[in-house]
Image 1 (cartoon, rainbow, N blue to C red):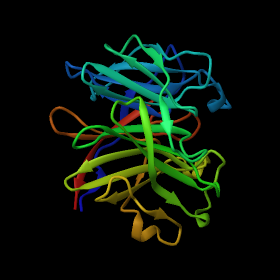
Image 2: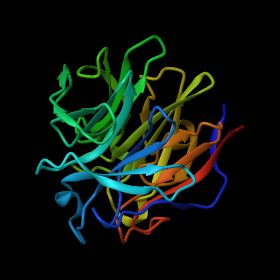
Image 3: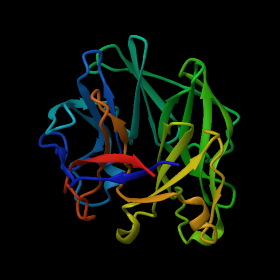
Image 4: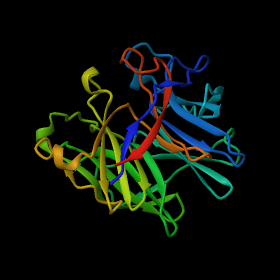
Length: 287
């Protein structure tokens, strides 16, 4: 098993100046020319951040940073959280929350058209926010999205789709137990991100109830089955968590030259490595 290890200091990837004063959950995607684009939660709020987030900031550049602030997108007057952007053919798809799930598409990453996705068979409250879309090896896509179960424990649900519009609930990819001590009503399994390395899939979650002491608590799980990472409890922490990283809502991405990177972000006042912005550091996968 290869394990993720941060191998450099954090440096600033992007700090907004016009459209907000911080960046929280975000998504990175490359365009056809290889330029990286970042879309992230932001606002000008100084408190009650999550209730005042109404659009995303868009920046572009390289992973060497700093990125250039471009515009705001998806400004529809309602809460807008945690975009996930993926390219499929000539079109880019953005899924975001909070529930009900919303979607926008673009051909060039600057003009976005809103659409209504369909979710079938999902238990109530299981698909609240923080979606992340991953291509399936043989066609189609999986979506990982956080929520809660009937006991108010955080879960990561996995859905599948053939067209990125209609999604079918498969199962809980990760469940958490009553004994973990993290049980916010919105679900503590924040910002799921899945990456395949060799024959294993790695699921990263920031397991937090938005308190300062666990805000950067990212846990890593590994599985041969991308739809099943088991059940996490305080009692089985040593057996199920393969790595712990100091990051909030990280993306794990590989640049065109093969170098791996990890990002971090968060609200101001929460001791983020790059106050008010997105930080980036080099990442290695090693035994």
